[in-house]
Length: 331
Ligand SMILES: NC(=O)C1=CN([C@@H]2O[C@H](COP(=O)(O)OP(=O)(O)OC[C@H]3O[C@@H](n4cnc5c(N)ncnc54)[C@H](O)[C@@H]3O)[C@@H](O)[C@H]2O)C=CC1
Ligand SMILES: O=C([O-])CC(=O)C(=O)O
Image (cartoon, rainbow, N blue to C red):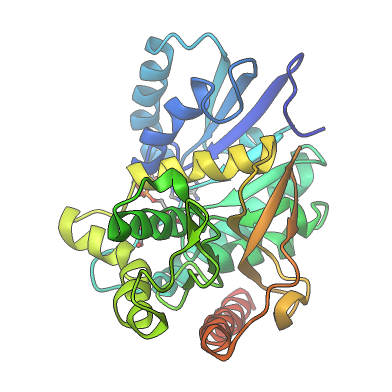
């Protein structure tokens, strides 16, 4: 069974555990923010050998955090150890984007990581494991992982677009001067890349539609959508490093919604099933309803107008081309 497992311990594997995202993420896992204040966890931390010394420092800090819910920590560079009996796997470890790169430029560096990790997860993780891929290009890495994780149902694998979702909600709130909690109905379609479509057509703030308040579709196309599409690059330009604190927060939101359920519709990149004309075989971000216990459904019945369709097709085409590139790299 996936979680919550109040009487048992949840085995949570995190890759890239000595990296900058994990440094913000691990405390959220250990302190109950993600799986709830009753859920005990065991952490399995995977790193490449050169980062194991740094990882030992992270482990010391986790120990020094004195988290009552944290039962044990295993550090390893072997995916077969990290993923053994894992209920949840958070795959952060990968080479991050630098200034001037698109996320798909990382494909050649990262595709082999997700092949190896897919095979290992398939062999040793819990049959019900829930996996989120964070390392970029996240959607296509999830697709690669799924191809090699033959024992794991594709719907148990996802890629992170919750950061984009959160960015879109925050920008709506900021532009309208309302609290972010009042914003609903935003979603991200497609790839976690600069072709993603942050959709505010049905979004509301305190139940009132926001599109007209944002200036209508043309203004949204010119001034809102590009801000979300290019937000990751803007953070890299300013910080010299890619988003880490907000990424960790989004991973926590993603896992909490997926495992514990959520009243609001959220965005997750999941295995396409033909919904909205998106073909099977790619991981595409949809609006999803999280039902709890690791179950979700893609929200159906949304009417797609020409404006949205153009964006949705462009990001689909990019994912199809990334899929072809990944397949040729793997050949
Ligand atoms: N989907 C999303 O919304 C976001 C994705 N990202 C992506 O997340 C990834 C990680 O970002 P950061 O933590 O900032 O990078 P980082 O470079 O600080 O950390 C990555 C860690 O992964 C480790 N690693 C590399 N190969 C590994 C392997 N085969 N197995 C286990 N560990 C491995 C590295 O040693 C390093 O410690 C990058 O690909 C970045 O582009 C970043 C922000 C948001
Ligand atoms: O932009 C990057 O490379 C890191 C990332 O995925 C994001 O911040 O959305």
